[in-house]
Length: 436
Image (cartoon, rainbow, N blue to C red; front, side):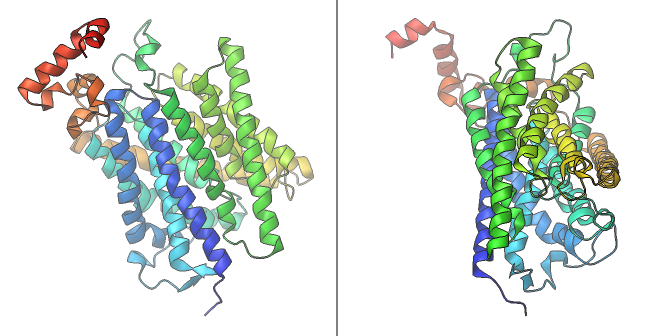
């Protein structure tokens, strides 16, 4: 048996805990960028992403992703049976936990894009399929010794494996499910579709930014010795620089387009910078990280504009952040990698390999997701009813995120309490305060 390093194990587990905490960030971000009447639904989807996702990845995903097989998929370790005791220098179970929270992250990306009009049960089924099959197959190609890995495709922490997979799946979902009611009507009021809490969204972004220090540096999978410590430090500073530059890039382009310093642009810009640097963070210099992160922020704004022109409704900007910025980050490896990048004398070979990987992953994930969403549409249905969309998807959960301030939950309450709530919220604000 290979020796287990206590320091490496502690590092991988701490990184896994940080990535797990990113689920809180996604939940707050998505809830803040959507209406209050859908906040419970958002929270439940994020909770079940990590719950069902962990189980699905345990039973099927890990074996497909990392088991021996062929260049397309693995075929051992089903149900984690037959796993070796050690993976590298850490226990295999520690490595599994780190990979399982990555899988759950890919599923959560879809949640925000299709928010406010998707059937809860259909979404959960799709999330399970993504973490049990679609994500692990792509992971095998790149991180499990599959055909893209053999070609030399480089994705250190998952701009493609995690973020683009989630983004392609989200794009398929948005196409099949359609836009929110009235979203692209002529002269529609954008304010009708604004989120209910920028502070919640901002807290979510800060949590995600914090968790990314597990996502990227944790992918080193070892901390013992000077070489590992140096590598972790480079990844960490590149992550920080790219996130900061992403804010600047999105804010500047947003200002040029609208003459407004839009908080939503800036928040998603930070995430665009983080997504973009996730693939190249271990392969590029800090100065290149700034350029890549800035490009990630710009990519988010361009992606939002493209979706608007194509009349595709992404409720929180997940597709521009995770797909558009993810593709940019993946391609930037071929441009800025210190070893093999076009700008460092490596020619176009690595850039071509990255391009092939982007196309292959996009074709597989988008097509697979489109098929799953279409099957769900013709069987159980994927679109919430018009009544549910109008009154809020929280009704299906029998709870309101803010019950003291909401009358929309009245139909699920007792008649007397419902009447009291409606009467309370129909009175003028001054009268409510006076009679408090």
